[in-house]
Length: 198
Image (tube, rainbow, N blue to C red; front, top):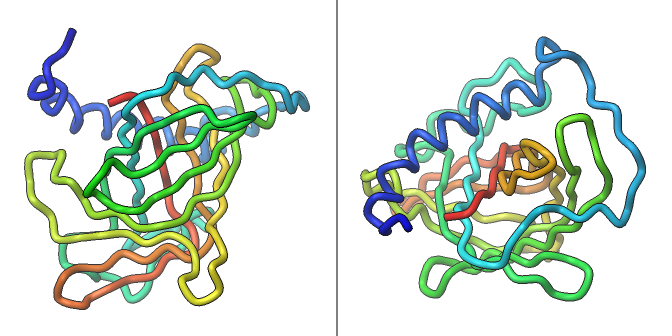
């Protein structure tokens, strides 16, 4: 069983692998679109417990799937956050909430079908969280999801890496804002997200 310190040392490598895999999912060069089979009872291979939730926007992007966050270059420490959430099963859906003292994120996820690669998921996400410095660097950046004025949640879709994998990668759509303690911020309409056991 890994200790927490040894787990931290693998976070950076896993995050890079997630980004590469995510690029393949959304790029036509990786073999075109996935054929899906409608299956609302899809059993996504998740387990209750701590999860690493990663959210990342782009200061520069030529991919219409992920438009550039505006204004670019803000906040100073970038437009990405790594945080920890606790995943539980509640009725017919999975719910991930921020660990105590780390934020107020609430992510509600359900399986929506199957694809060539694995299982498809969708859901909603609200709240905020600060970056927890899991890369070994303390970063002054937080993320808020959904509209604070209207109370509207951001929505997301995603896909597991394989039929047996607990790694989910996808896209969040809605109002996503990255900010720092100095008041600098950037707003994104779509960002990448991933979640995996921590």
